[in-house]
Every structure is written in structure tokens, then in C-alpha cells.
Image (cartoon, rainbow, N blue to C red; front, side, top):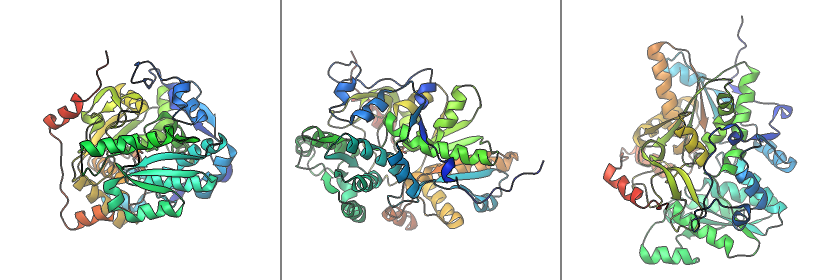
Length: 457
Ligand SMILES: *Cc1c(COP(=O)(O)O)cnc(C)c1O
């Protein structure tokens, strides 16, 4: 049988693009645990969630039965401006590594925000607009989510208030300016503009902030303003749902050439790109139709899946959000200051946590110098300057391809290349100067975070 020649880039035609998102929860036997009201410890109702999130997004958040949800035409029109994203056959990398493995990557960095986050930002902005809201609030760490949301809000003419972790605000002034160019207002967090921000500042003067703090501020800013709701760029079920467009496109592109992956790899911060990439494949596995090896890759300095506890935890530092059951390091956990590579959230998507706990997915942790080595190698061979977050997946894809070289196995490896690293040059500079170090928290340090987990009686 003659094999079809696989092009360097596999694109989809417009009529091959997904018209529905895929909701993996519908096929899960063990559903992800519900969000709980921290006061009553009862599952959050749609009404309670509706004070914080848009109504349609609440519906999606709570829906664990419908496998397919229509992508509204307006969102599909926006997707068309930058999607499909290419699925690239890494011929050059394979050759350089001398591996019999076949490597593919789905590249999500081809839009101005530079990452996959735009896939959910545009959906969330659309539902906010449809509900007649004035605007939305959010937090951003490294800045990709804030940028994506700013673009989406500009498109739908919504106000956008971004609380940006102070250390990033200072280190990444250009990210900030991109957001402002799209019309967002950007406040360094913690700030004096919210009650919770003032409280955190009083308790920790001079703190450079964390995602958990910025979430608390953004939620307060939304719930104390008429016509505003809060939106979040990862972790939530609805975000994984929107990001399933990555996996659906990948699957459609592979099927065009009769390719079946053996291993699917993604980096994991809050779990949205990984969840989106693997969802349709995981669906097949859950339904007993096919089997795949899934690998989540996280930083050794923020190892929620590989060393965390599977427990209910606070989603934010100020403890204003519902409780989520997830693999977590505790909401008080803050990664070491030398951590440069993103993926610093203390917890992990409830959906992915359940799949991992059920043994349907593996997780690995990698150290940041080896991540940047992989990033540099990839940039020099494949040409794309990868985001540090994405480079966690590159590291493990290369490791798996090198294993194939030893065993002679011709495995097909697919990984998610979530974004570009143009705004991460401070981290690259450290690496280039040989000043980057690795830090792995001790069990004693992790115990401090676990001690702060909520008592559930
Ligand atoms: C935000 C981000 C991630 C991590 O977030 P997930 O929700 O785990 O996907 C990874 N890569 C890039 C480029 C990002 O911007």
C-alpha cells in the first residue's frame, strides 16, 4: 500500500472546520466533581454562579451530559480570521534527532495574542455581549490571556478590565501596551482599587503578586459593578470546552491522511490547552473505540499533578471563589522566584484531575533548564520561537522521540505548541547567559501549601 505523502503543514478547508465544540464530560463515567459554595459546601447553583459568570457560560460550566455544543456563527466567523491553525509535521526535527518517530505539532501561536487563549476569549466575550453586559474583568499572569481577552473585547465593543500580576506588569511592559492598544485597562495586582487587594497589601507589603491574588481582585471588580461579569482563561470546564476546537481540528487533519497518533502531549498550567487538544481523542478512549497515551507536562517547580493532592481547594488567594476539587498544591503555594517558565497556577482543571485520577492520562514534571534547552533546539531546527510554557511539551516530545530511536519504534507523536515566546525574552536572556537555575520544592515546602487546604467537615 502506498502512503500518501504527508505535507509539512496540514490545513483544513473552510468546510472541514468544526461547527461544534466537544464536551468530554459527557463521555466520562466519573464526572468531574462540582464546584462548591465555600460557605455551605453545597454544589454551586446556576443562580449563584450567575452573579460571577455570564448565563450561557454557566450553562456550559454545569453541562456534563451534552457531548456536542454548537459554535455560534459569530464565533466561527472570528475563528476563520486565524484558524485553522496548522498541524505541522516536524520533518526537520525528526531528521536532526535521527528518530524513526513521526512528530506533529499543532501550532496555536499564529494570532496577535500569540497563544491558544484567543479560542476561549472570543467565546466568552461573545456570550457577555449577547447578555447585554457592559464589560468583563479578568486576571492575567504572563499576559497571554489578558491580551487575548482584550482583542476579543475590542471586536465585540466591550469594556475590559485586566488585573495583571505585578511582577509581570513590571517585567513585561510591552504586553501591557498591547492590551491597552486593544482598549483594555490594565491594573497591577495587588492594587489599592479593591478591598481584597488592599487587604493583601496590608498583610504582605511589597508583594509582587500572584495569579491567585489577581483572580480575587478581578472577581471583586466584576461583582461590585453593574453590568460586569468575571471571565477566566483556563481551569474551568467551559474553557476546556472552547479549547476542544484545537483537538477537533487536529483530529480532522490527521484523519485526512489516515494518521493515528500513539502519544499526545501537552503542557499543563490550568489544563485548558491540554484538555482541548486531547478531548476528542479522550472521548474515543472513554467510549472504548481507540487507545492513546496522553501525557501532561508540568514544571518541576509547580508540580500540581505529579506531587499535589486531589482535594477541594480554593481557586484564589482571597478565597472569594467557589471551591474546586482538583490536583492542587494549595492556594497559598507560590512558585519559587527563579521560576521563569509560566504554568504557575497552584491547581489543575477538575476535568483533567478526574481523568488523571482515573488513570486515563499520565503526567510528567520537567526542570526549566531542560525545558529551555528543548526550546532552543526547537527554535533552531523548526524556526518557531516557542513560549516557555509550550516548551514543556517540546521537551517531552523530544524525550519520547529519542526513546523511539533506542527501541526502533515508529511511534506517531502529536504535541500542542501553544504559543510564541516573543514576550519571554527576559527568561531566554537568563538561559542564554547561563544564569537559569532549577528549583524543586522540598516536601516540607509543599506541606505548607497542603496545610492551607480547606477543612471539609
Ligand atoms: C496560558 C498558556 C499556557 C497554559 O495554560 P493552560 O490552561 O494549561 O493551557 C500554555 N501555553 C501558553 C502559550 C499559554 O499562554
